[in-house]
Length: 352
Image (cartoon, rainbow, N blue to C red; front, side):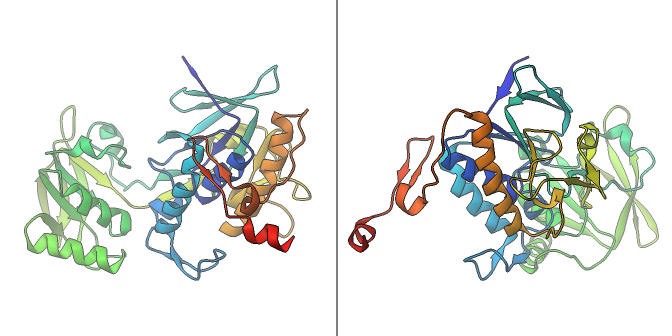
């Protein structure tokens, strides 16, 4: 099996993990990111993409999803690579001082520095209390959407009332044979514009919306064939190829809890006097997943932690080189993709 190599292996592709790619890129360091979710962005993309954030410097207000889009654009010159939809399970220290990180699919990643930027931990889907749901996992039951084409010309039932359920109902309605949206309340919790789009698609008979209703049973021989919903006290059977319950995610440390890290109240203890390194040299924890005296769980604090962490990472990766801090207004941004953004220094030279 081939090994995926990088300078810094980042566990978690949320905002802090993504910004780490930028700071590492300025130092000429290549990054690879692992995330249990199917797309980058962490909670900002999966749970509250339409939620406004007010404490990002220079941004009086920005939607969480737009923040992720901006970060992805910002790191594009540094060409990060990803392993998505997989959990980091094992950490192995190699004789050469580097680390192997193995995911739940046994995919192996190697780097001299590991940065844990997992937010509140790896996310696991909140499963509905249906007795035999585990029997159909991977056989018609999906908790996240990795490849929308899987549902092309298929009958799909989506359950949930938040942004994820609404947005995927809208998106999959473009390619699915039939979309049915089931929610236990008449009111939806998602963004107003998404609710309006779903209502319009319902009026145009593109989406079937069943509320208030809950999925109670799953039926099928080898694969899922139908679901039973409780609709206003009456049982109703719906033929379907896929059932996608989108009830949010549960944060857990998962395999990280077995890495030998110092843990305090489900958070990873770090040294905040210098670089946010854990008790394992070469392994750092930044963002909401770490803890130290005076810790604030804010995205902007995670950005600061990522910046300092990358400075020490450079020293670990290149112990015989001296890194001189250069301001991007002067040095510009030299991307791995061949781009070279540089500001006009005429005014700076004139002042000097």
